[in-house]
Image 1: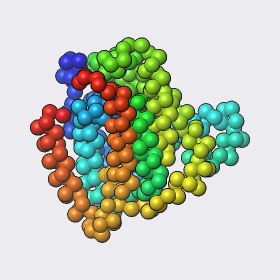
Image 2: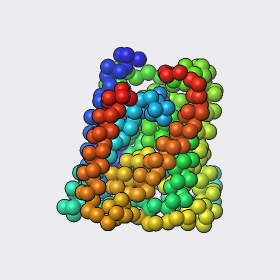
Image 3: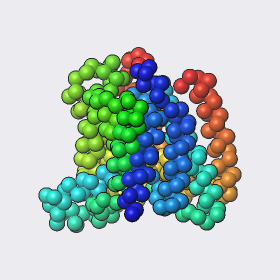
Amino acid sequence: MSMEEDQRWSPYLAGALSGLVSIGSIWFVGKYLGASTTFVRTTGMLEKLFSPERVANMPYFLKEVPLIDWQWMFVIGIAIGAFFATVSSGSFRLQAVPTMWQERFGTAIVPRAMVAFIGGIIAMFGARLADGCPSGHGLSGSLQLAVSGFIALACFFIGGLITANLLYKGGGKH
Amino acid sequence: MELWYGLITGILFGFLLQKGHVLRYDKQIAALRLQDMTIVKFMLSHIVVAMVGVYFLYDMGLVKLSLKPTILGGVIIGGVLFGLGWGLLGYCPGTSLGALGEGRWDSAWGILGMLVGAGLYAEAYPYLQTTVLTWGNYGKITIPQLLGVNHWLVIVPFLLITVLLFRWLEKKGL
């Protein structure tokens, strides 16, 4: 852990630089960062393989058409960029269960997989209902001073505080 | 071409997310357990830098805003739901892909869950569209519009409060 900590950039610096990336994208391409719509498009593309006619008539897939767009590539890019960053600092390693989880619940993969899967379902349903995630609402909405962005951000943290603290109730500091 | 811009923007963003240690379950949950505010520092740094840059460019007529509507029903219920799921998953939609790129492959369960969640939302959308998504629709509004003031009168205090918050977090060792 301490070796990994050494390669950490200040979150203020990394965050500020990512803000410049955001400005560049908005200025040169007219695109605000976001991520959750990509999951809708991907699910739509997968469902289309099995029942193309059904997908073609579903109102939500008419609104968010299942195709590869700017944001889809952006989200894939995040994985590639993260891979470059960890390889460049020699810190890449596969981890099946997060450290904090291991300390509380052990190293078994199945319980972590179950909770992550269920959490993912709830999180994405909520993100789509809210019309954005921590990127689209939290970053892009807030930086534009959108009322929706700040309300969403507050609600994200309220919900997260509830489940994270229930899950780790009575657990010590990691 | 737009797709390439998306990919490049994603790579830069993912690189910075990794360097800032934002792509970690341990960091995201530590923020929700109020133990380590790394992700909050990253997000707020992004927001303030991009806020100043984007509104400067906006005043010059070089960029357009892209606001999400403030629909209280959707944003509040969806936002809290997202948070509840986030507290279980420990990654948000954007960071889940980054975590995968970093080798933290428990995020894959979350990605699968989020794809399922997107599909469920697409099924529920026609119903939600006529109910939750009609509750408290205030349209595309910003905080300066709400207050009836110039945006810089909001941005400057926002900057000052953020700096004070950062100083407080550092003093508390969060």
